[in-house]
Length: 271
Image 1: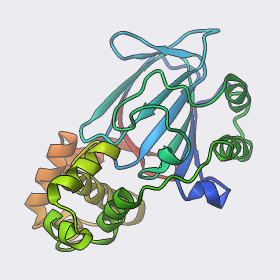
Image 2 (image 1 turned 90 degrees about the horizontal axis):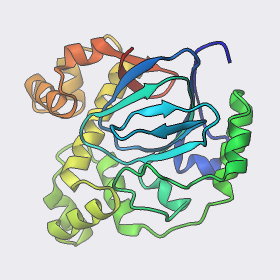
Image 3 (image 1 turned 180 degrees about the vertical axis):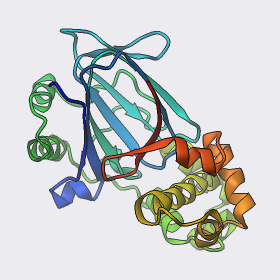
């Protein structure tokens, strides 16, 4: 591989598309060192690196002839800093909320897993042997289909659905009354499956919806309009949330970032 490459692509099987939002391929053949700031998200991901390991300080380091490295990234409410050292070849599955539970029960999916044993070596060899999105889609869909099982997640799925559907006048108290469970119990369930409270998860969802609107659909939309559309009290409220979740005011946050592919992979990149 002689060229830098980043491609996003969707699952083709509707059974997989119900739980996986998209895949992406990321190749940097001449990388020496790159730092990436990945911002809070409600989606989770499994990353497959072709021949890498994780160093003691958390860097992802290329090792010629090394084994593939697999890692799980949970819902996170702070900035995830990733440093890649040397050649990069990775394939990533980006799951919708709770999607990972339908394909494996290995691990605690509220935390980072850096020794994740998800795909088998033979599957990884096939995946790293092609850069064609159609071929990768077939391989990734097939790997997931072989692992699929329906898992009953009734209450937490109701919580997630309500957060995505109810943008206006949301409160945990109203959700508690609607579902007939205490606030404490709803938060306990949310932390058990997602890793954050109901309120914090909703905050992440609303913020990501707002920035996706700005990046993918309405690039010229001003902050006041964006804040109003997503039911922030005012522009100042939106700015405060942006600082809290990204460490940046909206202006520099959008200006410094780079949108890769056709999905919501928006990162701050330093090389």
